[in-house]
Image 1: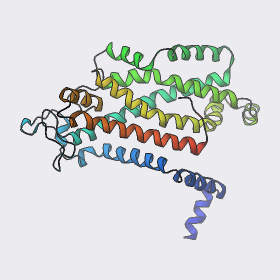
Image 2: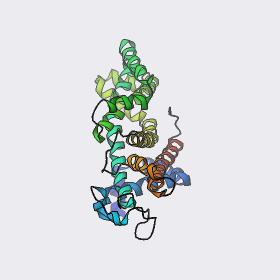
Image 3: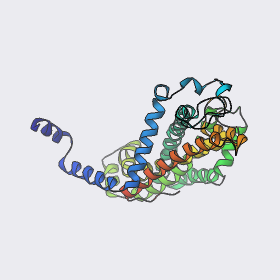
Image 4: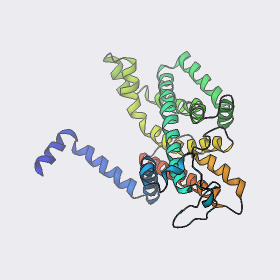
Length: 298
């Protein structure tokens, strides 16, 4: 045991371990944040292993069983069945896969682009800052959902188009946030020391500035994940996102509204699934914000 501890000390200093432990304590002392983390992790695991844990995996595709259509929630079908007899719980689990894929792609495309542009603008200043931020302000002036609707409606409605439509506007908030963080840090001594030592611009941006800006960016990304889920569900709800028979959560809600109020579970259950996922991301993001003690633009 002592050998393992000594090996750990070679890679992690006692001061850093103490910092991690205090951060862990601060986070776990916030019950709502822990619940949010549990929700996000549980849904992610369920989505990844949906083909193995879903009660009826074949119901996620082009499956019909009219003899079991419109069945209320029961032990056999915990969330009931839809108008063609498909198990709603199965489709919700596969719908979570699509929602989390959307989050990963949109933030995976939007965050790097926005952060790179924002760091460049904040560090360089001058005309570079002016051009980048004026372009950013132009995109910010457009309502996000309206711009996504315009892009999605111009092409064949698919999940890929929905991802591109949402990602095309998501970089703007990160550009503005990163620009403000970089501008406030650009005159710090560690940046001046890097310049004097002959460090390249890319080294200063990504090895010096970025690590000191990660906390607010991580908090915003976590909070934005829930908004991405809602935006994707909105596009699917009006027919510009995930198309049937794929189990998009927004598509399922839209289909279920045709059978309200009698067969309420067809629309309500996917709606509750969206609410739980968005709530999980928001609770986790609030916990991280309190943990890092940062403020981010909403």
